[in-house]
Length: 450
Ligand code: F0G
Image 1 (tube, protein in one colour):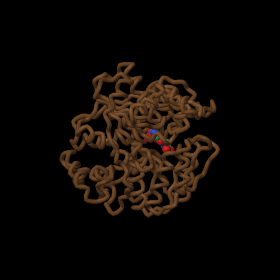
Image 2: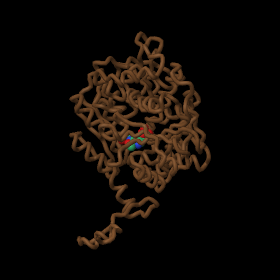
Image 3: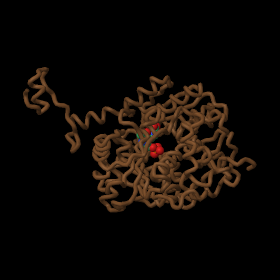
Image 4: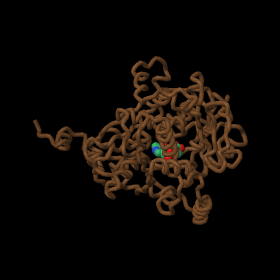
């Protein structure tokens, strides 16, 4: 390749390379996933991560406000003129001792990376900033995605910023109202398919491949480049110290794929001295990764993944008519498109996978709310997973852990209201019904009459 940036097949037996100007969502040679790769010897990368602080302090242009593009030397696949931003990534890393106490960690050890602060209210905006930049680079006019909700909301917003048409495919009845309301409000052409996310994903791939629509799901390797920035901001929030653990929910496995790649690159560039471990948390009702990685021992093996075992697994799901089901609809996915890349991240980060039941997810979500941030159910899986890993003593109470809170609390108010009004959980906060009468209100408040 004459260029410093290119696309490359992740299968070590193939490793075919393609120009970044090509729009591809699978390797034309072998059908495997593609990566964006760089010839780092030809990229000017700062010699130390704290160089990036100067850019944040000065903020001379809109790209420096972006929590993705202010790290642009670490995802150098397009010139600045193509970079799209609507202010994504202005997030904070919060040390939260309330959550630490709940999960059994010592104070000062649990950090929450709150991606709900993004313009569309979820981590997806990091990826969309990059995917839409590539869409512009390649002259795309019409983008499409399948979604459990957050992707559709983010895509709809970024399509506006780029003047592109946008079509989103969602499963009927399996999308939280906060997210559906965003896609509709932002003007996305919304196709509701009678099926779930996996069904939508299959259809959108068919449509995009045949009709030249630009696919913005995390199959798109450029999208994952943007999601690497979530890790850069965690490092920044820890004064460039690497945490011991990253804990993230797993759905389509784009995040875990991007995070492992980010750390492998940072280590290769000598910008970090060690790579953190990673825990990916499945909902028990959508636990493909857990089944394959922990129960069946499927590993990346340098790109030589046991395809037959994975196909058998999926055939069995089909034969049983299995449908994933979890209260965390964002991660209600049984055929994660980035499975192989995630397995690679597990290899890079000495990763582990756990599954957590819906009750644990909803309770953990309410704990995040109680201690001051608020997140949607899928994000609660990170906290429930950390709690489980503490109970197992896989994570020690004094290790430093960064949990990703992937989406905002208001994305899925129905689950929250149900927990507080009907579930009678340990953290339920029932509204107090009272007659419209001053004395009754004072009594309900527990105050003495004056
Ligand atoms: N958390 C939230 C809030 C999500 O919306 C998603 C995925 C995930 C976690 C899982 O992340 O795919 O990187 O493992 N939502 C997608 C969507 C599928 O369509 O919005 P992942």
